[in-house]
Image (cartoon, rainbow, N blue to C red):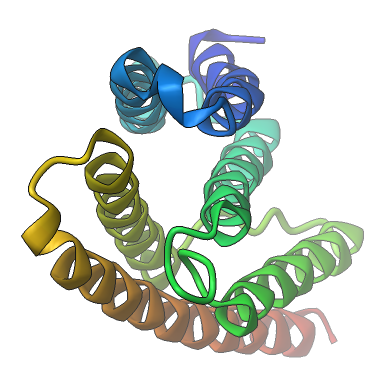
Length: 196
């Protein structure tokens, strides 16, 4: 467990902390909302620094190539489930159908990674997957901003616009998610031909 993987593990540990605080009663919002933002920002900063540490300190490993995207997926789905169940939007903060597409995609990637491991190939994150991750982060930030406005009763005239913006960003991130899944399938097929 090197520095890069320790930072990745920290993101996983912070996920249930986010859930617990997110579902505290609204009367705790005055301190809970800043803590939610802190957990979210720390998680994303450690995501950046674990990759930086792996590259700069030569800590890249097959384990890290799988552990980092696993942590990303766990953290992001945790956020999205909170916003789905939280119900701040008329049909939940995030629509179930889009979240299901995300979950199905992530299970599909997990399956592909296992198939490739059987061929001796470690499938790390690809550029489209990284773009998808950035769009997820922006969607989570917008949804958390929506939750903050609603729970703190501030800037309420802007709430509807923030919600719509978060939904649009999330929908775009789901499109990136599906496209990146197709990219992974093509890589898997290419690997199969090379090994065949």
